[in-house]
Image 1 (cartoon, rainbow, N blue to C red):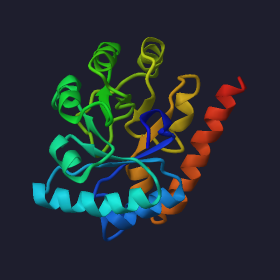
Image 2: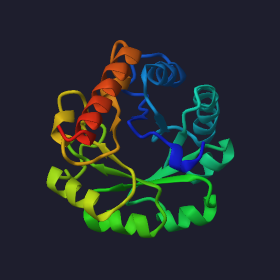
Image 3: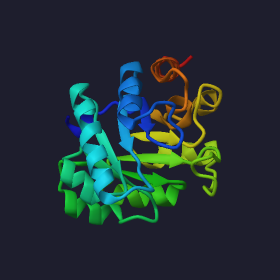
Image 4: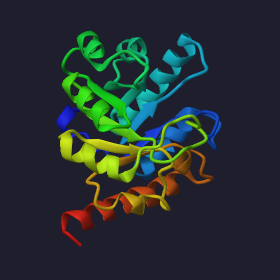
Amino acid sequence: MKKQEIDYTLYLCTDRDLMSTDTIEEAVEQAVKGGCTVVQLREKDCSSLEFYETALRVKKITDEYKIPLIINDRVDIALAVNADGVHVGQDDLPAASVRRILGGDKVIGVSAGSVREAVKAREDGADYLGVGAMHATSTKTDADVTTVEELKKIREMVDLPIVAIGGMNKQTLPELKGTGVDGIAVVSAVIAADDIERAASELSEAVRSQKKQEREGS
């Protein structure tokens, strides 16, 4: 999939501690069937071998549904499984270094919580931004919260796709009206649901509806 063709509407981040299914593959397939448009595989507490093997299994699913697979942090795993790209945070390898390793064809996402971080990410060659955390969450309890005002400033300053992350769900989605974001990143709102496919479907529909209203100026 070409980088410019990626739909960031509903960006799923996996978390094996929160998922309602027995395996990550089940959770990912249900989420994708429901409407998730990007999958980021995030594994903080497993061996490199287990991460690699899990990534291979998940990639079979994302390839089948023609959904991009992004690997969190681990450039080596992304290369090993030929994933579509990597997402890095402010404490990971700089995006410019990741670009040198991955080459020009892979997608690089960067977490940004301020205009300064967002501009730096763009200068370093990022393809999209994960902006937040918009709210403190169980997965990122120590994250600094990004205000909606800062998000709007980032949107004005940086012409890259933006995904809002951190506590995003149907209840918090309306807060993003007028920000011009391209989508939201979700963890527990989808992956912890009893019916993952339905949760993804409802949230995807809500995001698309809100984006449509913004485009039409209503």
